[in-house]
Amino acid sequence: ELKVEQNPLFLSMQEGKNYTIYCNYSTTSDRLYWYRQDPGKSLESLFVLLSNGAVKQEGRLMASLDTKARLSTLHITAAVHDLSATYFCAGSEDTDKLIFGTGTRLQVFP
Amino acid sequence: DTEVTQTPKHLVMGMTNKKSLKCEQHMGHRAMYWYKQKAKKPPELMFVYSYEKLSINESVPSRFSPECPNSSLLNLHLHALQPEDSALYLCASSPRWTYEQYFGPGTRLTVT
Image (cartoon, rainbow over the protein chains, first blue to last red):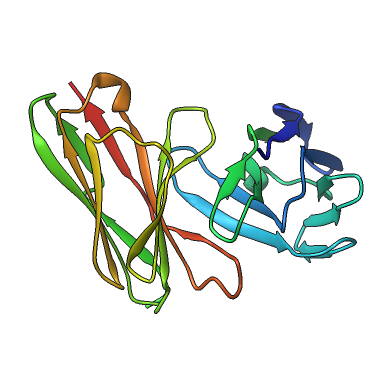
């Protein structure tokens, strides 16, 4: 059974700094997802990573996937307050079944 | 139309009530999902409908009953719920070929 772990669980970072969120998964996952969730809101899809070595970037966020290490990272460059949210990674056991990590709550302060 | 809609936004119900949650999408997606999310926890998959057929039931108690009347609509019928069922219920849909799941805004359910 697929298990997905994220760290850190909580991240407080200063504006302008860089940081990385790590997502480890236990068994083969067909693909790896990253979602953002603002408090009391729904999930917004950020990235879907389909193959080993995949790298995707959108604004200050960059996600990568290493299937051999069973590791995905979400790198934040020059953080701004608007990035404050909870970030989830998720693996998939089959086409439809997503298994979410515990989430990383990110707070960006001035 | 590029979104998943859910109604109601909020629902308070007693343990003896029967209510339904509704989810709708008009993007032609052929897979639809129900998730449950407790506060400060990740979403947990409950049900998956693929081409209007139930394909995954994650051992959800029978007091939750899903229904997919057509390819655009997904319902979740609730009956005799417990206070621990209070949560945010999220619906999602997927065109499958992109593997992305698009989430609706959710229904915040409180069982008293």
